[in-house]
Length: 64
Image (cartoon, rainbow, N blue to C red):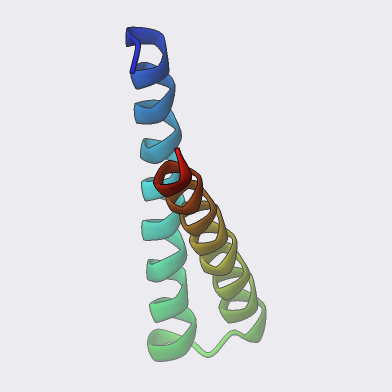
């Protein structure tokens, strides 16, 4: 992996990590502290998208 590819990977997964953590916190907030169906739905959608992205990358790395 080249230096540029490593930097791109790091930036991509830092963003994925931040989105995942914010979505988990929003899900907990929407379920536990103040019931909010919009917050729960938005956070579930974000978590599904992050999961799909990571799973797709893992499959492509395994195939390479």
